Image 1: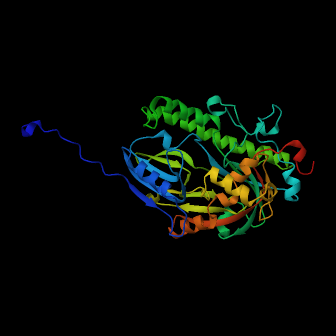
Image 2: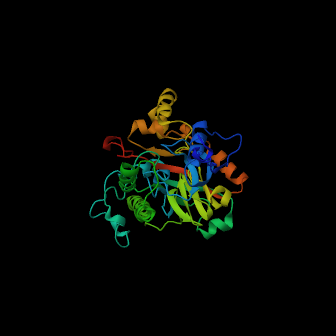
Image 3: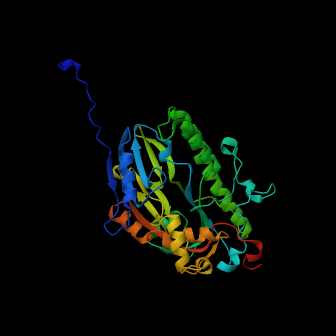
Length: 379
C-alpha cells in the first residue's frame, strides 16, 4: 500500500478540564467523578466544575456546572427550572406541631376558588396547568423555617432579614412540563445534542418561568393556610437550567448560579440551611452548590434507615422540627443521614472563595407529602 493510500486516523480529542471544589474531608463518590469525566469527553465540552455536593445522577452528575459549545438537554435533565425560593412570612406564633396540622395538601391541584390563584400575573407559561401549585416528590419540599443566626448583618438587612424572622423555603420545579420537554428530545435524539438549540431554549425558558411561578403559588397556598399574607420571594435561584454565557452553553444540574447572586443552599429535613452571597468565578463556571447532596442512594437509605430509625423518629427531627410526610418510604429515602453534612459543603465553598454565608435557617415544619386525614396533627 502506497503512502497516499494509508488511512488517516483522527487525532484523539483532549477531554474538557474538570475542577472539583471539595476538600479531602468531603464525601465525593468515585461514580460521580467518573460521570464528570464522561461528560468532559463529550464533543464540544470546555469545562466541568463539580461542587462539594456532587453525587451520581441518571447519566450525568448532580452538583455540577458544565460549559460547552454544544447544547445537551440531558445535562439539564427532566426537572428543568427546579430551584429554591425564600419568602418572608409573618406569624403571631410559630408552634411546629400546630402549624404542621394547618399545612395545605400540596399534592392536590389548586381549587378554582383558591386565593393563591391571585398570584399569577399574565398567562401560565406554555399553558401548562397540570401540577401547578404542587410540590412534587423526591427531594422537593416546602419548609417553614426561622432565621437562627446572621453572619453578614448588612447584607441580611438589605434582604429585609434579621435573626428570629420566619421564612418559607420552597424547593420545586417544572413538574411534568420539564419531563415532557426532555422526553420529546430523547425519543428522537437520545443523549445527543439539541439539533435546534433555539427551539429547545424556547421550551426550556417556559419551564424555568413555570418553576418560578410554581414556587410562588406554593408559598401563597401555605401563607393563606397559616393565616398570613403572601409575599414576593427575596431569593429565587434555579439550579437545573442551561444559560447562554460568553457564546457557550452553561449547563447546570444541581448547581445554582453563583455570579453575584443570593442563594439558599438547602440542608436536610433535620439540619440547618444556609443563605449565602455567591461570588464564584469562571473556574467554577460561575456556580455554587445547591444543597447538601446525597451520600446514599435511595435504596441504601431505605434499607439502612429502616434498621436505624422508626417512622416517628423521622417525623420529629433532632432540631425539634416536624416533618409532614404521609409516604413512609419517602421518609426513609429522605432521612438526614442519607445526605452529606451541609456544614462541610458550606466550608468547602468558603474555602474556595465561591460564597460567603449570610444567614442560617433552622426548620420548624417541613412538608414532603400530605398525611392521611386521620393522622393530621391537631385533628
